[in-house]
Every structure is written in structure tokens, then in C-alpha cells.
Length: 544
Image 1 (spheres, helix red, strand yellow):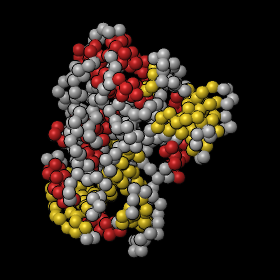
Image 2: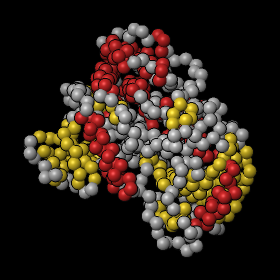
Image 3: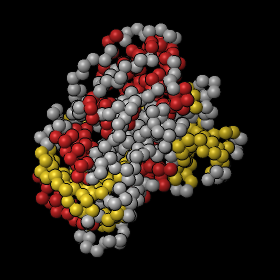
Image 4: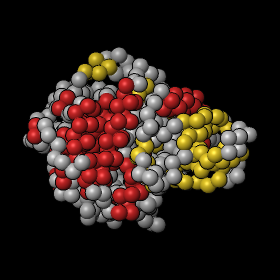
């Protein structure tokens, strides 16, 4: 693609960054004879045709959002165009590193310099908020540093313009999971304070060299965001109380943007900011979120996530070998408390944004740990005999085929250690089918894996009850079957799908060491029909 000429004007020179949604190119504007950056939306290659129009609308919204912000610390958008039926954004080229690059190269930044960078990012956010724009993805990879140390905030690709609620799916959480504010993890609508929280997490990363809430999985990270205080920032110096203020769990307890700007200005001068004593971390009572409306217009109040034991989180500095396959039950349980199966789009977890190669705490593999909503697998005639009326055979890109009722949507998560999980649902997770393929499992058998998960869930799910857990053969392969129920109602106000839930999980291990699993869950009151459906789905499952 190098050398491609776009719109008869912009010639691509070289790729300078990539992320979960796209790739950034250095390009030459052959009309004005200047260097520019061009963002290619590679996600458009994989979305279903029905979603393409929404992606195009989101891209144009990004350009409009950035164009509404008049500030020297915001990357300028020059043009938006379409090529190969995909959107491309032409913007100011910033030579230099991202903050993520800087931390990766240096280990960490001095507090005064981090405060100076944060001050400029905050000023950019204040300008954006004044224009009615929320950034929603502030992170080290989206903070750019020019050779003369100019600071710019980029990638408003998931920005939300005030009053515009038509582009993002109802219930979808967008953003990089390490820097999602607690209220966003719970499914509440974000506000300006959510951007400030992400700024606090970004500056913590800058001075400590690691993300404050990074755990060994996206779900563990979200749990930590909601329920844990960050480890003490031992290198933050005068910036420490500012971080504590910005990272308050309750958005109402965070400082205003004006207050935060004063604090950062003082810290940038090497002085301990005044007025921060009230923001010291304290033992927290559960935060009960504001009422929100579901996609059906129902008013609900979302509860905080039920805290899990600290030993379940693992270590940031020396993580143990992970037990990854069929974190199904844990994910479903968390979804129940977060908001009843909301579709969670974890934007390139463990990777940087489009402004640089990666987050300092992430792997260098730019595709690791991503979770995206991708193109639905195409219906196929392969193995299609005996497909019930109203169902279809679907060949999945992950490497399996399955029969499902027509119209179910698909999302996929890919872990760098070999785990791929694909979800299918007709109703945002209330009824869920999940298929997992793990090329590097942590257990020698699926039965041992299920025993381990069963022990963990017994202490984590309210009214958990194991109905069945046994070894069995699956098509002559050693496998296991696990069935259980739990009360999906959180301890606090009821969530969107308040109901006792029932789940079944069938897994098996192939001779080449690959582990497969097929899982389904639904409200317990509908289990008779769900079980019949699961039997058909399981019989239809084929590898490859």
C-alpha cells in the first residue's frame, strides 16, 4: 500500500503506528507540498456490511468533533475522504514520540515533566468539553510529544459529541480498558470527569512506568478499576496528591477541570499543590450509580461490581501463569453485576493507540489481547444438513463452524497466549453462546480446568450451585461437562437482566493440545428451551 495516492492528492509514504481500529501513515500532500498523517480505518475491512455505515458515521463524527476544538494541544484534522469503500482521516503530522513510547524508552518520567504534560492534556480536554466533546480514550498512546516537547492530544476516534447518541450501540463500552473510569465500567454514561480520571491513570503510568490497574486479563483489570485503589505511586513526588484526586472512584468526588489545572500547574513548578488534602485515598463504601435508561427505555440503577478476593487478581509485576480458558463463567458473572451482559468493546487491550507503538505496560505484540466486534461469519452450507428451520450454519474465522438461530450477533476476543473466545447473542448477552479455542491451555484436561473454575466460582457468585461436574468423552476426545446456577442479582440495586441464571459448559482436549469449549447461559426460567437449543448447537459444532 506504500505509494498509494488517495483522492489524487495524499501519497502514502510509510506506516508509523497501528492499533485495534486502524493504522497511521506518514503521507505527502502533493497539492500543498507538506507532510501529513493519514489514519486508515482498518476496522472497516472486518465489520459486517450492516455496520459499515455506522463506522463511516463514527469516522465523520471524529473529524467533526476534532474540528470543533480550537486549541494548540489538539491535533488538527485537515480532511476526511473515502477510498476502497473505507474512511481515511488526514491530519497534522506530529514528529516525535507518544507518551507511551517515552515511558517505554525511559522507564518513567520525572514528576514535574509529567505534570507539565498533563497540564497541556487537561487544557486540550477543557477546550474539548467546552465544545461539547468528550474524548473517551485518553491514554499514553494518544498523547503525542514533538521534538520541541510540544504536547498534543490525538485520536478522537471514539469521541462523543454532546447530544449525539446514535453512533455507539446501546450498552457498548468503548475505550482502552486500563484507562476506563469506574463509572464507565459499570455502564454509566461518561462525563467530563471520566476524561479526567483517564488523565490521572495516564499520568500515573508516566511516573511509575506501569498502568495503575493493569491485571492479567481485561476482566481482572475492570474489577481492579472498580474495586481497588492503585498501588502507592512511589515515584510521583509532588504529583502524588493530584493522582489521588483524579483517581477517586466516585466522579462527584473528583476535582473540577479548573481545580485540576491549578494542581497540575503547581506540580509542574515542583511545588506541592494546595487544596488536595481532601482527596487522599480512603476506605470506600460501594458507589451507587445514577439511574440510566436501557435500550428499551426502562429506568434502572446500576450497582457496583461485587468485589472478588484479591488473590484472584494476580500480580502486575510478576504475573503467574494464567488460567484463561473459559473465564466464561467469570465473565458472565461480571457482566451480570456490571450491567447484565452489556456488549463490552475493549479497544486493543494491551496495545497503544494510533499515536505510537504501544502502552508501556503492554506486550510488543500489537494484536495481543484485543477484543473487537468483527464481521459476522458468513452462513455456509458446510455441515448444514439437519439445520432447524430459522437457523443457519456459520463458518467462523477463528476456526470452527456452528449452527445458530438466524440474526444472532457476534463479538470476538483474542488473547496473546493462544486463547480466542467468540460470543453469539440475540439480545446483548441475556442469552449467550460462547465458543473458546485455546492453543496453549493451562491444564492437562478440561475436567481439571472445570474443577478449578468451579472452586473459584463457589466463593464469588451469589447463591452459586453446582448441578453437574463430570468427566465424559466428546467425540472420542477426553472432555468434561459442567452445569450450574447462580443468582445474577447484585447485592445492590437490580441490574438490567436481574434473574437467577443457568449455564452449561462442555469442553474437551484434542491430542494436539488444543482445548475447545462450548458454553450457553440464559435466565433459569427459560432453561428447558435453552437446554434443547444447546443440544442442537453442541451437535452442530465442528472444528476447522
